[in-house]
Image 1 (cartoon, rainbow, N blue to C red):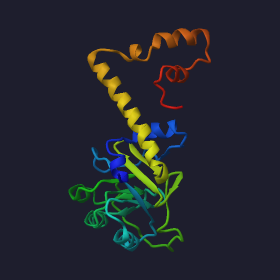
Image 2 (image 1 turned 90 degrees about the vertical axis):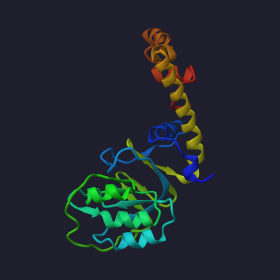
Image 3 (image 1 turned 180 degrees about the horizontal axis):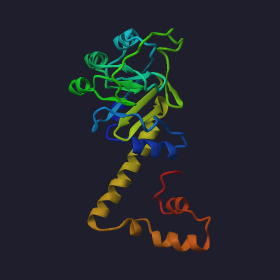
Image 4 (image 1 turned 135 degrees about the vertical axis):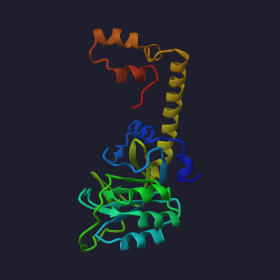
Length: 232
């Protein structure tokens, strides 16, 4: 089973909770990074690239990327320029990439929407780069997104809630935990629809009674005891 199949149907929320459960610090993109078009879900191995003021590096990296990968662009979180537009997005679409995540801004929003390739960025800005700088030594081996540095050993999943980066060698265990969390949440949602409140499902009266006599008895401890915990 490939990475995309193993993570199919798992949201960033499921995966973030699963990381906590497995003792893995979730590497989440800052919440300002959002999809250009909402309602998308992207999964793929990271193809990193650092912007240096010219699109040539994007063309180079896209040409060698495997289909299904996600281009992750590091523009140092800049909001005073757009580092990609419709041409780069169209090139990535033609190369069968799964999407683009930009730690920076995009432009040509209307055209990008028509290309139908998921793009995540810090927002739109009409002005492109005014100058080029020297290429970073790590320009095609790693990319920074917020406080994190990612590379080709990482997998990215992105949806309407944001983006999360997972170490490829731990994807299987994270996915197993995430599926368990997903099924538990679906069961709780179904019970809510049928008329069983969370107060009853989570035995909240028991929690309140124990917490009243022992403030150290937290909700997290209670959920662990009744088998509803997210974290271990």
